[in-house]
Amino acid sequence: MFQRVVPAVIVLCLVAVPVRAAEKESSSPGVIVRIQSIDGLIDNVKYLAALAGQEDKAREIEGLIKSKAGPKGLQGIDTKRPLGLYGKIGAQGIDSTGVILLPIADEKAFLDLLGQLNLKADKGDDDVYTTTPEKSPFPVYFRFANQYAYVTAGDKSAIDKGKLLTPAQVLPADETAVTSASIHIDQIPEGLKQIALTQFELQLANAKDKKEPNETPTQHELKGQMLDAIFGRITTVIKDGGELKLHVDLDRKTDELAIELSVAGKPGTKLAAGIAEMAQAKSLFGGLLSSDAAMNVMVHATLPEDVRKALAPALDEGFRKELEKEKDEAKRAEAEKVIKAIEPTLKTGEVDAGFSLRGPSKSGHYTVVAGIKLKDGEAIEKVARDVLTKLPEADRAKIKLDAETAGSVKIHRVDAKDLDEKARKTFGENPVYFAFRSDALLLAAGEDGLSALKEALSAQPKATAPVRAELSLAHLAPLMAAQQKGAPAAARTAFANDKDGGKIRLTLQGGKALKVRFDMKASVVKFLSLVEKNEKAEQ
Image: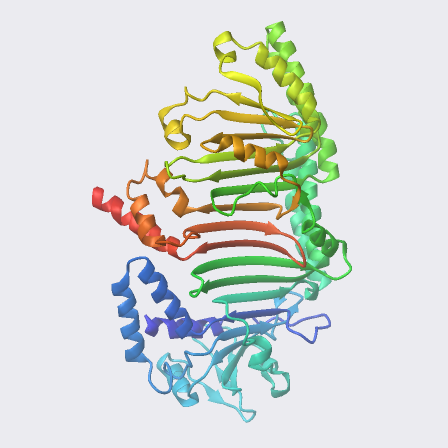
């Protein structure tokens, strides 16, 4: 494996494309990439391999390391220090100042390695080595400094002694991620930004002009407004964006795998202000989510004004078409009442909803509670009451209006004894409860449904991430057993007594930067491996 790793690292050093920047350059690098040490990478591979039940492969890797790594490092490369890349963004991308940093344990051993790879390196009077890979249209240059090989392609002035950045500037000691990358959007030349925007705008125009089968003019207008909104957001990020960062990390102490992508706005811009506002936005259901749930989902977003304006006529058109399909005048009249009640909510262009699946309890049942924001919930409840009173007698008997109260809010109950077997096994033979507030509809079901609903009704709006989704495989394993019988046993083995075992999360949030983060417990790898082994054993 390592015999292939080293050549691969060298190949990475040979792919920098020489392009000269036409515009004034910033004094700091526009692009920085950091990759943890080879030893660190291998330790992480061993860790994940062990979790996946591939201990034999992990031991094979460890033995290979011991056989190849001597006192001078792995054939001249220091496997204990990180690798890096830095460069400036010129008119056509990462230009000729792009430099790769390879940690060196022994300069002579490294030169010998290049010789073994048929990459003869000639040293110049300026201490810069030159090598030209086979079939390469340009030479590659490197020099030794600060216990690193600084490698560039095309223009060796990028590694002049006076231009070299120290390893500490590119690879700070406090950065421990497996891989991290940073791109300063504000350093991209305006000409390059404009080219990118022009190309994107052309693609957008083609998408807007294309008419789908059976698409009405109103729907076409809505599609155009949505595409324009997307282009506007992208334009804002390209023009006002600051640093774009990517982190990929595995923390073995906390047993956490994480991928995070973030973008910040330049100080003082509308982009920066908008991202900061996202962190302050409150959801009606911010207090609905449970830290000990099997699953939580939260979405809170608002469509741009132009899209909202185009949405209203599209909804009107859709409602009208549906009503025209109903030939029974009485049913059409009832449908019109429902539409008039819900359309103010739909036309706000705002989605604020939360969902929480809690459990299992000692009896093995779950509780679900959910809510969605409404405009004039009281009017919707009035229509709902009217519709319910006109149901067939057998169905009306299952519904008890005003069965409970929470403050001034009436709670309604639905008999759930006729649920199918799967639903009864999940939630038990417990009623479904629902309630309308002036601003929301909330629903709960399951073993602890009533108390969960009352708790949700009394919860205050709370600042939360615009998008948040998380699940716990430890809590969901009993539900998974219907399709994967070994899931509960796998969960007990993989997560033991860890109450956060098997957590998987996805969040989008604002603040100093707009962040999209995915993280999960590394023990999830062990759980999935055990489930797979069990399935194979049953086949």
